[in-house]
Length: 398
Image 1 (tube, rainbow, N blue to C red):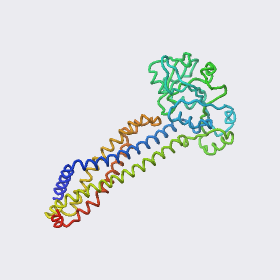
Image 2 (spheres, rainbow, N blue to C red):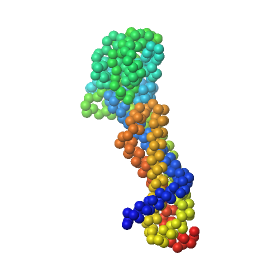
Image 3 (cartoon, rainbow, N blue to C red):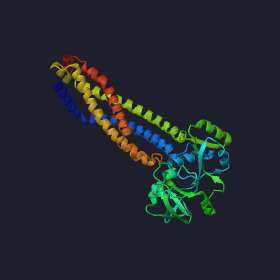
Image 4 (tube, helix red, strand yellow):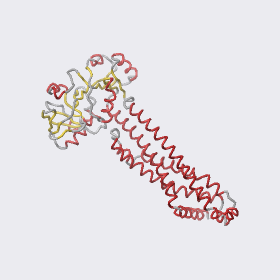
């Protein structure tokens, strides 16, 4: 009997929702917009955090040293694969070689782009590195690429390899070079790297070297010994040279995180305003429904429907609207971040974030739940007021 009553109330709720289609669509769209914005904001935040974490882990270094004035440029190359050239003198290497906490260090020097015959690779970075020791490039070489570089031979990053396809020779600053290996995808700036040995830099022309001068390096990667206190080591390096910028795994991307926090604050204000508007719209919609359907409620109460039955019926109507709007909002949020993701260089993991995964499903359900709660909250008080009417008075008022 109870099941039959519940079923009939649900059927009645579905019928009532379809009676005032336009009015309910307005509320549905308000909920979908709220859920869409919320899902987009959460997916965006998750995508940036995931990308920063991946980039830091895959970098392979515990500490990174760069010129003070080039810290933001270095982060852009590491995190966003943007071509950068900046230099500092290599005299600091002698002092670092005496620091016992350092297990190994590797230097990179950034030059310009690779010319592949008829065209250039946008944002491809020529990187001069030392093969021995090397803990940045070597771990990412494909199995068939694990061979030492010879004269006029280079490795290329994953992006450059994909761009060149099957080509195994190219022109580097007007001189022919042979591509003998490539790196797997790392999600960092080295995906766009073209790697040459440090000893081969002398073979390049002055025009090709640009502003580079002998003895210049761009960046120092440091791998610490097991159990070393990173903060103490950073303080020690700062005492050696206070005019150098020091980044650790935890601090790389600090500017990005600060910007992300500012963006999230804007999202939060927008979502709060959208929530308030959705609550007011739900309240207005169900207040109008309450005014129109007093007689219907009075008749239902007169033939035996309880107050709880009336509440359930109208809450189910609100739930239908909020659930439908929430599902549309989930789709909208995923489409929005997939569309806008191409405009954010940092979001290299955007495809993984917007695909079916635990985080994306959790975020979607979270957005759906908040959308339903907002809509039901706005509808609750008009519904309670309508359900509390005396049956006879409700019929007479109509």
